[in-house]
Length: 242
Image 1: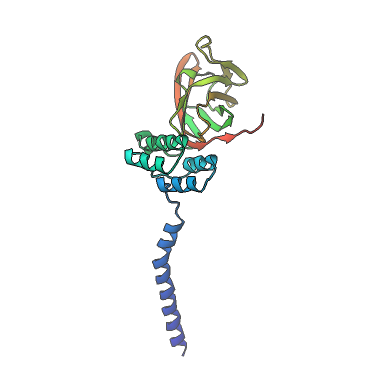
Image 2: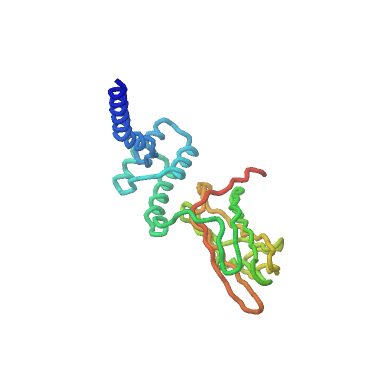
């Protein structure tokens, strides 16, 4: 009797495992976020979904838009607004660049020689973004100078921005054609200082950083070096205060 029960239990277990193997892939496929298409945008437009909601959906979802001549005619017939179509074109163009295809999120902490650089985040307030970072010197005392000329932020729409201001250890200077003398700071061995770059944002539709390249110049015992560090694929922090 016990042998029969054991065999029945094993048979039931095999059936359950078989059913799981059969249905789990389809369940996963259904839960996986599907890319937005032209039809999705047209349907949202017909249902009078707010423009800001459509824009946010485009920026935060995988997409598979058709922005060929026929695709644009389809969108026009669907009464999709011009600014939505332009955003669809931008997103498609950025997706198809070699840089965007290879871009993957990077660690928010980078190492160069004796220096550890930790990106604290990029805060957006209206049309300005401030990216703040800490520098820790695990070697001898050195002089650090931010290099605005070779620092750049690229947003998720492909817009490239140079810094308006740069700061290191509480010393800040505007960066312009007239003023090209960035702030300088001495960092002692074992110490941590903070720096930031401020950028002007071109579009109110961008929500994340595709690539941030920070360039720093170092003078260590009168031996001058410079290095670049990059951070990729992270969202802006929004500051809604006035």
